[in-house]
Length: 419
Image: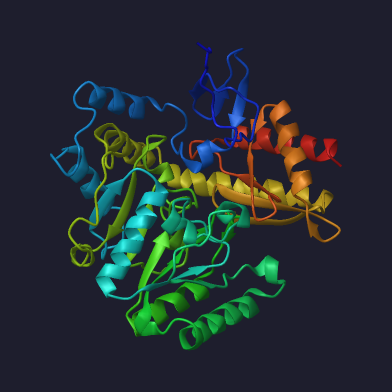
């Protein structure tokens, strides 16, 4: 008999060469004991850092009590507790929550809900958005063609509108916003009639698309059109939410209320749980059986989410994200004066992106080399953007000024080493 050994899929590609033996606060520690500043946060997941004691304690207590209380079979007491606590953090019009495992799953649930609640087929998304990798959510995703390659055809009923990416268009914010709203209105008369448009779904700050914030007038324009036409406005807060932007929700920067919110990543400090939030009335318009799942709202993950919210409040991590985000932004803009290849620095709070360019073209190769040099010096970061040209900064919300300054110093060394 041949001796077979299991292996990981060759399609699983890692951004670093690090084996993570332990996580501690803002650091990952390898098997040899070397410490790395983790400015990836597991793609924005470890909001309270690695293994925060209060989160660990809550999870351990729940593990010893009940691990799996399947949500459509029995009631897990942690779920109504989590819904109540989230209800204190969401806008007044949003008070009902469906819990699942990942952002892509609540995007799928969102697709079902907006179509069933409105009786309309079409969903408008915005160029550069990322909403997940399962087929429905992938059909809403336009951040990179590589994500969609080889699996077409996509789900029907999806219309893509321009996002106000000022640096991409090369116009002023006013000109860019005028163009995007004008093109959206054109969609309503050429592609998707308002009476056939169920929802507009948008990231208040684009994540995978390149860390691009929307702006107040654009978001107000979406709300105005949603109200006028009876269209639902859905905010994907999977990456920008839970304090990362320096406000609790990314949309808080723009003063616009959504009809539904998609929540995941930083919700439970690394445990897999996500939520679709809307009004109870809207949820009730969904069809029976349209919300469910074997593992959704797992008891241990819910307990970790409750502890995460407590830590964010007690340690004032939203205010820290705002302050440390400003320190990071100031440091990056200072470096930009000496390194013009850092063509654009953008983002909100602890969600900052540096766009690398060479001769006017996106320079994903340089960005990749910078990340490797940072890794060699003890700093872990990631890339994003359609050409992988964006060096993205998303440290845990507990990051302090010393760690920000250390990371900026390493980044400058990497810039010099790759010049």
